[in-house]
Image (tube, rainbow, N blue to C red):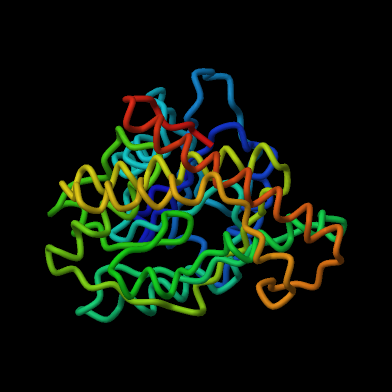
Length: 299
């Protein structure tokens, strides 16, 4: 490992997705950015400690371990080991564009900007089920709008280390929504966020139905967690009423093509209605699990 002090520390928590990490590391190796000015910290968030990483020259690469479950606990571990003045976050299933690090440093060179987020573009296989492809339009990451509300997802976010030094780290007990919760704290403390289109990440989208449902349940649980931590009881009640009202109504509007982003035949539209209806019920189930004191799923 190099003894130089890097400008940027890239932190990647990993739980189970070791097969996808290789492409992420390869993309970091191809960055249009001096190799001696950034380091990569991979955080193993599994109970097993026998993980080994292949050498990725010229990456300044380190593997650290965090046994407390949860991506935010893992990111906090990465922060503790980081040497850079800028902390950049992405995930094992993400592929940063060649200019990713350059876009980060270019944006944060502005003394008035403390944080930055960028686009996240889903990658879908050519043979994906058309109803899954349609739903990915619903799940797409509206990162520019989120940055306008003061936060960015940790799949593609960077911040000056001084922000963490001031307001603290992520809430390591959260399984979802921790990036939004931390971002809101940073916004309230006056740390401005910018959006850089050059800071693009390609994300390997989930195409398996069960994986999509797992993600949906985790997101819903995280949304309620954030509302509760902000003591927004009215928002929690409103969201729960909305989920209850939608859970038992099939979304028949999708029989009409005007409500779809991609062209679907009649049978696929019927299948899509069933799929969306199942998602509505899973969302309600996740909310009920939250109110019953249940834990969020990790993936």
